[in-house]
Image (cartoon, rainbow, N blue to C red; front, side, top):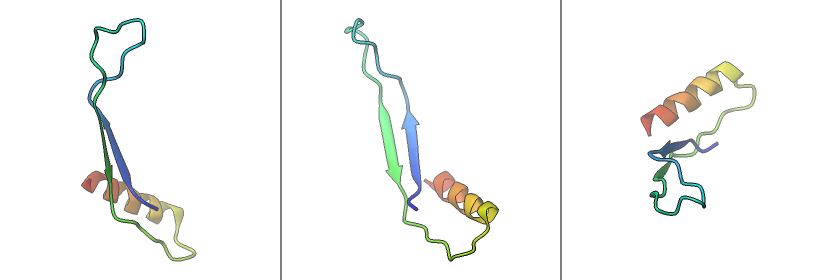
Length: 55
């Protein structure tokens, strides 16, 4: 699993409003995370949430 953080500063504009600026998007990828077989779902969820928060 690779943690990903997606940040959207402004949403894009509809095509019928060409004078409005486009949105800004930032995507950050973390280091891959592996879990041994049998890892509890709650433990894996906490590890992923922690990794994404660190981005």
